[in-house]
Length: 169
Image (cartoon, rainbow, N blue to C red; front, side, top):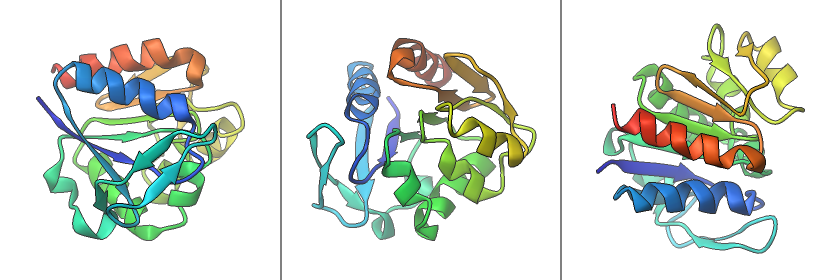
């Protein structure tokens, strides 16, 4: 069983949160939802209601075995907050399992750690990753060591399968 951090805020793409979280829980993993403050109410793009378990100031990357970054407009907001950027950066530096879908990989750009990494993302995010030095692929899922990225909700089955495979290592 792994303890997985999920960083999220308002306007997350509902299914990009629920599908991987449900798949992770089904495998016996513990999920901790992290936002600005514990207890904050988060609303997805399509009305999903989520309550934050922890605030970003109350957690350390050392507390977790993996990180999930769902898409939607959530990652664009989170990348403007250096606390979330540093949290993500620690996972990448330690090569801990890190999973991002759709707009989720946007936050990797702020870490300065995209150069030479293979990844994918939503169509409009791919050029940004490319210009930040990533090797961008147009595939349903791209696995680069312990980094798993995916494009859209249509790719969730492949994304969830790749997450399970990385965590089983």
